[in-house]
Each structure stands twice: as structure tokens, then as C-alpha cells.
Length: 192
Image 1 (cartoon, rainbow, N blue to C red):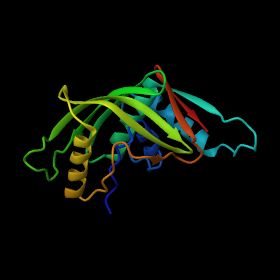
Image 2: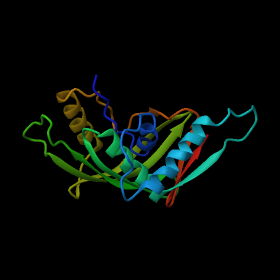
Image 3: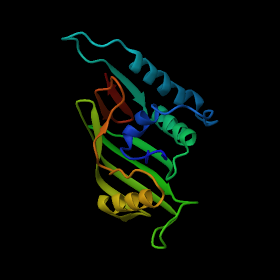
Image 4: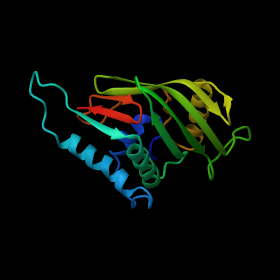
């Protein structure tokens, strides 16, 4: 079975990718930054469970490191539809960014463009080890589009090419031991 559509969930993408085996070297311009996130995720996954009544632990990830890690994982996993993703954490769990869907080499209907650059903004929501990204604004080639449009394109492309379709705003399980993600300007905070 082909791998499932990996890009959805946006900020959770960097965490979800950690569950897949590494198969490629770091991107030449980002090895130190992406490695920082990988070491942090290893630390979180290997941390002993909290004793009853202990406060959650928190780690902070810089925007630069987060984006370097995402770039590296996209290259490693060779996602069939996502060619890049940049996330810009804002205060109060707000996030802005951009991503590009690239359907080169795939079966596509004539009404779908091969290359689709998006810009987005929205907020992150986490609850009991699950997370989702709620889009408030989405633009394709600087024109406003709806989340339903993006979901329709992704579902169509996934079904035509043998991938499991997933919704942009669906809930996703966070990796082992991660209970939540919060954003501040330039940072993501991970609680575990």
C-alpha cells in the first residue's frame, strides 16, 4: 500500500514525519537546524512518564529549526504531492505560512494545475494528544479559495493516485508522549 498523504495537519507534519524512517541526508543548507528538532523529538519520545501530579514538561522550537526540519523530512520522505512547506508561528496559537502542491508525474484531470502554490493563516488546536490546524485564510496564486476546495483537490488527487485521502482540518494523533503544541511569535512550544 502506498504511503498516506503526509502533508495534512501542517504544523503536525513535522512531528508526524518523525515516525517515518530517515532515508536521506540532511538538506545541505539546514543540517544543524533540522538536527536540533530530531534530537528534541528523540528526547521527548524517550522521556520517562510523568508521575501523577507532576506538571507537563515543555520544549521550545525556533521557527528556523522547525522549517529546516520540515524541509529535510519532505526531501527524505519524497512526499508525492507536497514540494515545500514553510510555517511562521505567531502569538496565541496563530500560524501563517505557505506550501506548494506539485502533481508532476501524477495522473491529473485537465482542470487541475500541476503546480499549486498556497499561502495560509489559521490557528493550531490541540486536545488530549491530538491536534489539528484550523485555516482562517487560504490563497492559491494570491486568490482566495476555500478549505473545501483544497480538500476536494487533495481527495481527488489521492484517490486517482492510490493514496489515502485526509482532510486539511481533521484531528491527528500527536506522536508518543506529546500532549500539545502551542505557538508564540517565532516559536512552537511542545508539551509532554
